[in-house]
Length: 308
Image 1 (tube, helix red, strand yellow):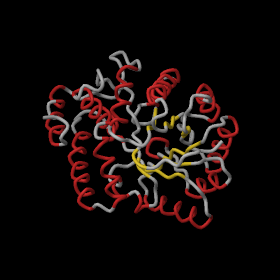
Image 2: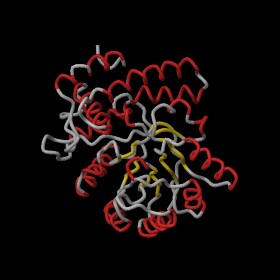
Image 3: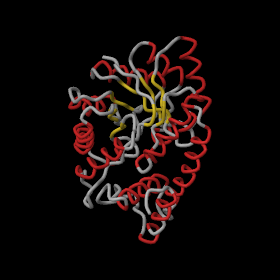
């Protein structure tokens, strides 16, 4: 099976709204899905890193992906992240989603144990042989500890094992090498990046779009920025980039939380204030913003034009 429609543009890695006791808040998740679609996104990446998948049970991850799919109801493509610590675990998680209507599934290399490129090849081949869904490489070495080399991605794509990649490596030379390999060998591969500062220059770096966590709060701004870049609208690009600078303040509010806590707690606090989700709960031990830190969120939202 291959992806039948080429996806391009802004594909938010949707957060997973949680109740105070860390259960998936499906009502909030459905509202968030509609907020994304109403603001023009081109797809949704479900149960990804921004969705705190690594701290959720398999049942919670399936609930979140299925809820997103049900609410989307075919309006945009949905890619479900089924990454797990081993190949069989990844397959087991993906099996309930086989007939769900997903546009594709994504997997990282196995995490915890370090793996060689040969083992990564075996990993993705095993998944694809067991699960008849279009498969994406999720390359995020900051959390997985292993980089999927460009030659490995190219080989997997050339043999038909994978159809796409989300590159969150933040290593531009590796992406450039992958572009060259695909061009020289005429390999078709959907390429997305997981960073925010290239949203308005995806075509310039040879990719089809971006999967940025900040799109949870500012989907319309990012869509307009991406579309402005595609149209050669320099003023529109400049305006969107100015909003990106404002939005970046949201991830720096947490004084006691780590890198990821700062990002997700900021997003969830903003979404709660906007009335899109009910709670700003993040998975323990990640820290939510303190009440003092939250006091800065309304000002950021006002500067973004999201609040009066």
